[in-house]
Image 1 (cartoon, rainbow, N blue to C red):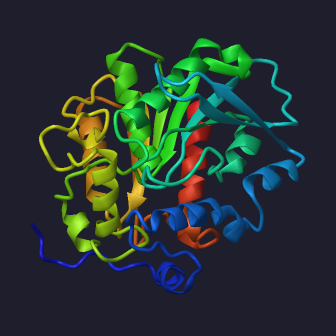
Image 2 (cartoon, rainbow, N blue to C red; image 1 turned 120 degrees about the vertical axis):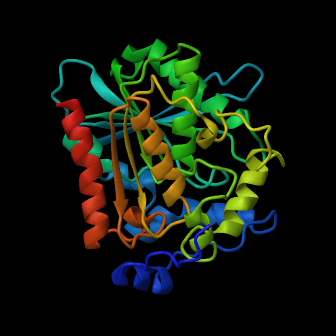
Amino acid sequence: MSSFPGPPFAPDLEDILINGPLKFMPLNHETLPVMRSAMDSIPLVLFGNTPEALISSDPELSLEQASISGPSGAPDLKLAIIKKKTSTAIEPRPCIYYIHGGGMVMGNRLAFANFDWVKQLDVVVVSVEYRLAPDASQPALTDDCYAGLSYISSDPSKFGIDAEKIIICGHSGGGCLAAATALMARDKKGPKLFAQMLIYPMLDDRMITVSSKQYAEKGLWVAAQNVTAWDWILDGKAGSNDVSIYHAPARAEDLSGLPTTFIDCGAAELFRDEDIAYATRLLAHGVQTEMHVWPGAWHGFDLFAAGTPLSTAALNAQRDWLKRLLS
């Protein structure tokens, strides 16, 4: 294991990390309600309003809500559907099936901030609200996400989407569940995904990489939070040999047959090496993969340091990949 310090934060990103309004406290049962409330208020902090208000005030966007049956014996699932109100499309539109971030312990279906994808690319975003740890543990989280994907794939006309062009996407913990759902869809011969978009995904429960040591105590999401989250997600099995690939996708050895992939991460974050390793294995198994490692970037920089040159470059790269994919 390397004893070298990690690459430094980019100066403007470091300033925002130190002096900005967003701080995650230690994660435990006592702090979790406060952290969840803070996570849900991030749009208000960053954009000055709630997601519902931001969408309703935008003449180009519409928001619909739906409730569908969850996995057998589980609660119903809630979906948020975001569309371009001014679309002139005649054919069904491509769909981004979105799984929100928050370490799989926080967040909700309205935690989607990339409205430009909807407006510029005329895609339909369907965002699923899955059960969170520690209220639930795996397999519940992945099962919820798979159930939502199966539903929209089986009745695409209900959402105005093209079932042949469903892109699964997630940030952070949502990136884990997106990768896990893609693996499950492959192995169950379920919905055929057009692509997967994994944005600084949380893939590995074992905390064995160099970057997990280099940034154990630095950044927005650090080792102590990660260890606690994985312990809740896997019901105490984190780090053991008894962990499914559908719960921690870094455990998967065979990545063949997965869809075209975009994956990115910061060079100065906990998940850097597990994300690079996953991208490398995808390529080794013949999966067309685009990988970005953003220099000096901490976890979540593109959303929480919006407007900085690096954040703008990352957001442009994500949008441009989607644009090329759908052209």
